Length: 109
Ligand code: 2BA
Image 1 (cartoon, rainbow, N blue to C red):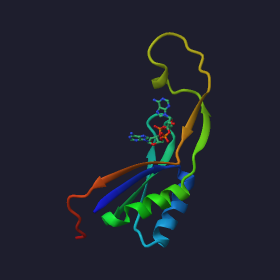
Image 2 (cartoon, helix red, strand yellow):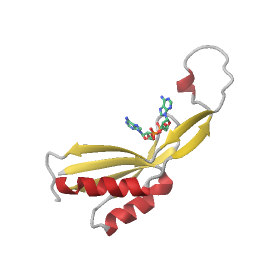
Image 3 (cartoon, rainbow, N blue to C red):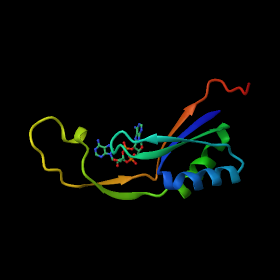
Image 4 (cartoon, rainbow, N blue to C red):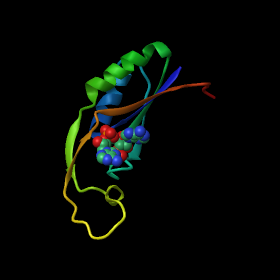
């Protein structure tokens, strides 16, 4: 069994979970915050059998869209030092950052 953790744009998360459920998968949404932009995103957890991983990845691909954002760089990206006039930088965000983890043991108690 695998746990698929997908960090996605919150605007895509509901539709993604709907699509997963329609295809007979189970899913949980957690509200999360990106470390770099410090903006809200969503993490979708889905526990599946090994042979369903490809299907879930396909559903994620279809429902999560890449966005270009222009943001002022967070202080952590500027580094230590003196005065700095921030210039907006372009970041390509999403569609999804996906981790597929082996599950050692699964049990519903
Ligand atoms: P954030 O950390 O807020 O990052 C948002 C976007 O900013 C990233 O999009 C990337 O395009 C850019 N970015 C991140 N760190 C950067 C840096 N040091 N310099 C320049 N640009 C940078 P994505 O790569 O699509 O990531 C979207 C969100 O997925 C991230 O939000 C974070 O919450 C999560 N994520 C991405 N990679 C991860 C990882 N290896 N481990 C844990 N979470 C991760």
